[in-house]
Image 1 (cartoon, rainbow, N blue to C red):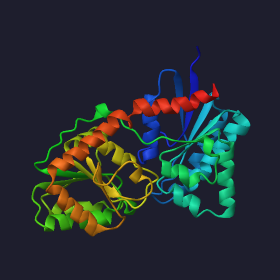
Image 2: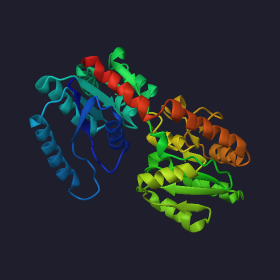
Image 3: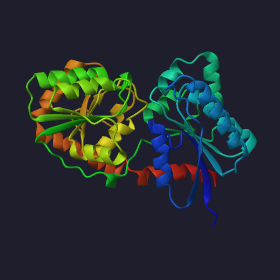
Image 4: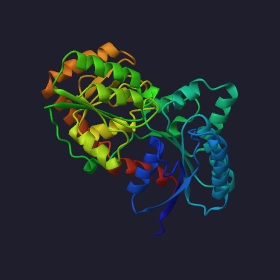
Length: 354
């Protein structure tokens, strides 16, 4: 029997962003019954003068390459919001009207819900068009599914949460000291300024049985560098490899992400659950689908620094409860949010066409 061939279209082998990591992990974990190809769409990063112009030229080159490459059985387009979304529309139109292949359109992006809500009449019409020509639409949370439900046929939409490989982690469940970790992009949207204030208030209260381990890069990393210099209980690791990230999360017991916007439970939270962490985060977007207050973590309102500080202070006095939360999260990964199950769900979508 000939294998089903699928091409993943998106930011392939890109060093930044959860979508690239998702494509890489999904590609690795699909079964041998699927022959997977990938197609990089180019990068729209703006890190240096002239980068936008160069990125536009490179994106056009990638588009031409797609037009002339071998046609697979299915095209799986991964899309975020903004310019990336409009670029994905071009690939979708080529898939349906030139390649004439089934199209799986995968909605990622922390702010896609806001993108849809703030869209003009014509933007909504274009969005409705790409959803109408898609044979299947995948989202990363029920929240994302609901945010596009007015623009797409409900029976087309399937939500599949982020997943990890449980074997990559070795949870330690250590409480002495209790390690609180943050690993993500160090940008405003992730609540970095709130996190800075929370850490200072917790340490100023005199809590001694706690260590904060911070990792990642971004425009606000100087906040973490200052914390590292000022407090012996704070360690800023900078950029970390996948292996180092797995180690840090396995040695941690609490993962903190006071984020302001996510499309669903972000990959950073799911990874932390794999490492055996209780999650301290906000009630934004789709996070409450996965993190339940006082069951497997702490969920506070966005921007409520005092609530976060009080909750952390309370958790430091309840190590047994924190371990229970952490073990529940590890169990969720082992039984639900692992790539063995999630990749199978994606294959079930593919199999609808053949």
